Image (cartoon, rainbow over all chains, first blue to last red):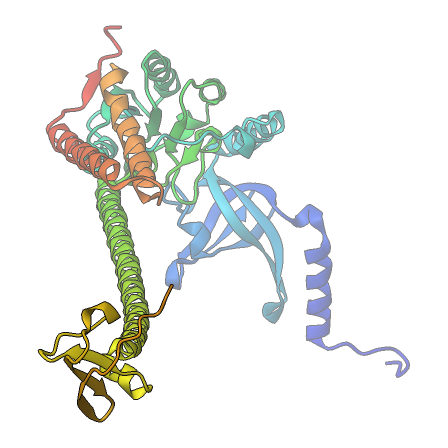
Length: 403
Length: 66
């Protein structure tokens, strides 16, 4: 042994081989044909077996997620084609096939053909998302193509009726497996095209081991691509998609699922009605409240205006009262003055007043006031009224003034 | 055949229209009440249609005869 050379561990070697093999794309997703031997149903549904031909043998492992898809019961001696990748199991230094799909020979070639057809149609754009039409969830008529007396038709019809009984259901029975199936399905499809349908559901018959090859028929797929109405496919299983599933506008994995894709649920409609009623009621109540608020606001405004008016009037009245008072006082003052004036005047006219100013009044002996000298005779008695009293005297001489 | 059936969806649309109109602040109360009445009528009519439709049977198209 030479110390200068690298010494690998066993695991190093196995890991290196593993990485080499896993990098080689020519060992990935390959189709391998052979006969099953050493078949074992492992724990948890995994399958372990070998594939052999007259010269060679290889171990195969198929995990349960993939094994579930197998539509036949594999057993030793079966000629099969598997889709698999080569994988190294390092702990044992062995390589094996990691298997994804398995078909019996005869169907194996179909698998290849199918892949080719799928690619071709895909390239033509038949599966494009942009081609998918939307489904009218309030259909007046729905067509259903499926097998007579199948569980599928019962599920579809029951669920459509439960969800949206308004829809008329037209059933077009057809064989869905067997040699005549593609032609029969196409015939039913063409017949359905003559009807005024909102949606056409294409379903399988039901049952786990059925052959879905009719739904990979090119003519049928192309016909469906040109359907007048949107198509809901309920053909393939969850893990096994047919070309009809790809070309359909919508795809359901169960018949019930197809009914659900085709219709609105009446419970949703009824819920919607309830919302509509609530919304309308709410809107009307809101309107009423608005109006009420409006009225009470107007009322308040009116009251304010009224109060303003009254207090204005009150002020007015007070003003007028003041004016009146003033006018009255003025009047009184004026009258008072007039009275004083008159008193003065009257005072001036009083004869006694005249006497006080030094004048005197002469009367005859009877007391009659003498206003002219001619009324007096010599020796008559006269009375002279003078301030402070009166004088009785006798006239001595009369001297008339000559005018 | 579609005239009578199409009505269901049309009436649903009308119902939505009514709800929208009533919800608009500008629509006067008396008109709102009129529309409300129309709306409730549509609802009971559509409910009746759903009920009536329950009894309907699916139509089997016999392809061989065609």
